[in-house]
Image (cartoon, rainbow, N blue to C red; front, side, top):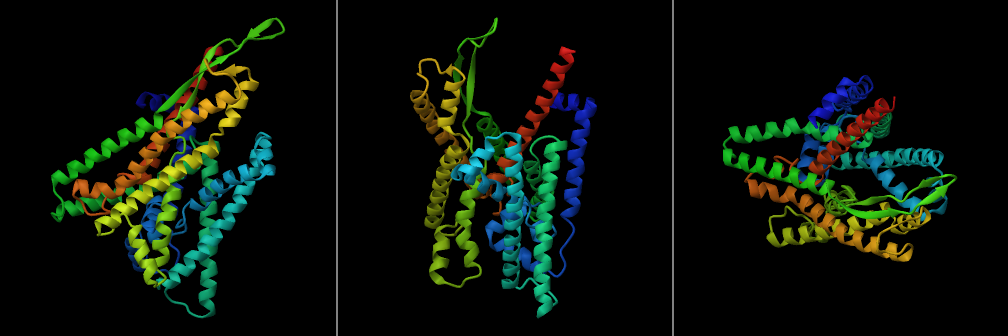
Length: 433
């Protein structure tokens, strides 16, 4: 990995792309510290401490939500819009035809995604205005001026999300790796120094000792090793290509393999499950209804009652497993893969083309997806188990376990693979010349 980085910096074009990414990160960090006026930051901090879903949002935004800066909503509306468009592409035939039209169709779908992002961002910003009013986070103006402040904050938050969306697209085009993933990666890594500082403060206050820190480091390293192993794991299905005669030349007749990833859904199932798990508790903060309060206790993995924690953990794991299968089925269309193999004259040795190939691939995907789903469930629950295992207060180091570490490691691996692909392409170009 280090050799690849050094080789990348020796190439002017790749070095320019890497520096462009760092430049975008610098702009992002500056934006994290541009506050929106008229907000009580102490009230925001209390809200994040009481509602775990907002704590996770604050982690993804690099602390922008707690400070309530122009990037307080992060790039989450764009992610939601992208997921919605993926689902609509399957449900609506017109969008499915666009997706199959090549570059022109993809550009059209990207344009629709941007429009949907703006709508979702503005709606979410209005919801944040209502939430801020409920917790008494507004300072200063009342009456008609308060309504103007609502609109001003909503437009500012929407513009911040739109800027992050543009930044992600620029990183994809002129930088290295997936721009949206890199923006989330930067937000999580920005919060890392604050979490380390919090741990040092706990150690200086004798709340934790060296044994707790050592256990935390061991769990941290072990979690990274597990994520790397499962993220890179794949089932290789052998593919045999038949010989084709075109003119005086013979093509095909070679063998290759079809890689099926164990964790094909990535981090999306955890995000879906978290949204459902924390939605009742978020509503319960603003609605004083006793049945809802009791229900949220059964959905809280950090509740003081052991039975509540076990039920919540089981429900959380089942949702992750369900969404893993669901999203894998959305992103990996087994009938299309089997049909394409048949069209190109390729087949799996020992399996007849057509329906038998489809059934075989579906059987394999069902089995390996179960392993990926169980892995995602364990990773998601680690953020609740690690504090007890390491003997540290809950929320002191949230980077271990959950979506945060999965995103960080996954984006790092994807970025290194993108750099190696660029190096390989340039190596082949030089060889041909």
